[in-house]
Length: 340
Image (cartoon, rainbow, N blue to C red):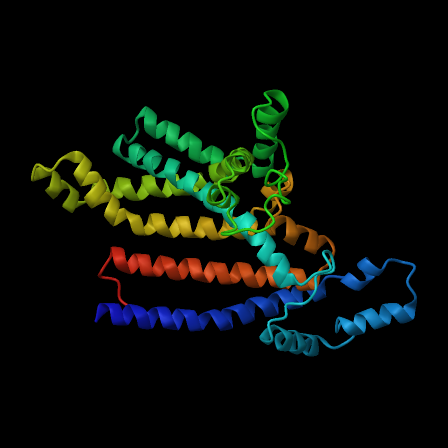
């Protein structure tokens, strides 16, 4: 019965993706056209004839009322057409397919690093409350929240690339696009292993270290702070005191009882940070010349590239919805008291 309710809830949430995407697309459509300028003027330049300029605007539907432009875009979108990017001169869906794996790989490894550091740090700080471990955890969390991500990335580049020469500079995904012409999973590290190219794997790992640490350090701070707060509360609860009075080992009490009950808010903040990182790590990609969605959206904004901006927003909104759907399902698995 519980699994049936969960499936019905998941189905309703999946159906809700469509109206949410429509609202996000409408807002993006409106905002891009409120801003002065259009992509035709930027691409065509000042020397094109007025007749040719008018023809290009007609092809892009820019000479029509807003509501008609939106309706025509929805018509094309229903046919699987996201438009042609003015900056890359190719289909937006193709651009997104090419660049999403780079962003997904970077953000996923950065979040794995963030969680691997934040969980033990937050748990240790909650167990040793007001000790030197707690002070270190608080200091690291404050640094992660307050330190500008672009400054951290530049400092890491200066120290480990320019000064020490230990790691590669801003070369993107090792600059090996020719050797990586046929991706399998899109993760350069995994595909290199599947192809048996260990030299490429090592280069890919080296290229990931600095951007992953930059993004992961900033993402780790809110997760560590949340972990400390909920674990400190859980360790003071009645069920933990009862478990300890029964003589259970402290490690079992912490991991099986306290942590299990504290996982839901930890997962919630992790999902929020993960979704934000997928759509908001623009500065990291620019600093490290990473060929992902962040750099793509930045160039699209500079060029008033309407189709590229709309496609980026659609993709990021969809990923957000999938992440929170997975979070709700995980919450139901962890806490059977959750009702839908």
